[in-house]
Length: 223
Length: 133
Image (cartoon, rainbow over the protein chains, first blue to last red):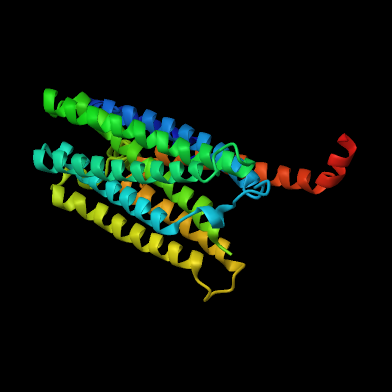
């Protein structure tokens, strides 16, 4: 790197100057091409920043839940309310849908219709199954007098899990939009960028669900 | 700077998160990563659900085990589904992730820490009720 001897630096500079011909110019051009960032990378990076901000928002809901988890105000707690068999099915649905979403994104990049449409349809069915189980659980809890107004614990529970459910709903609408766009416009570069963002969104939802089923359900029923 | 440095740098442009290097290859090759991720995530999920209800282990260790398992599973999802790796083409993605994790940690740990102190200092509920009467 640096040299204590001034003459060595000058010698280096002279040698670089001597070579500053077509060879160096081509090298600089190669380097510029290497450092030029494609639109796909910028879009993916920007969406990654958005996802991280979404995760930061979820962390506030998690913090609220963790603080209020014990404040049941004499009402039912997690051990009475949560059915781990349901949660297991929900987790399986979301995990498999993450995989099928991966299949769909491979299919989009490789322009294989069967992979793309098959993966997207499987993701749609699994996501809808997850949502219907969750809605069924919520309706049952409200019917048994354990709605969000019952206690601080239940308010925090419904905000956190409901917020994730709303994200899944938005994701399903986005999924249908992506299928329609690929069907109508084909595997265009801009459509593929949107597909990249959608798959990132869907995988991030699964990561949040992993935290939800551990923090809310498993720790809620753990002795 | 040595002469070799710029040449090596030029190979490492950034890649988008969620876009694995395998995606440029045959779809079957790219599918392999997702299959590994699915297998590991399934394994960790099953262990989590088993640990939460088991009576085989020392009970106070269960929340710690669950915390370790959830962090491991998030890592599996990040690497195999979102393709966030430690490669030199992923430095920006990892730096953004590290900042996000810092903020998440501050919010959750800070909230728990502060409220536990406030709970500790709070007057017992029956005394508050008596004063309001």
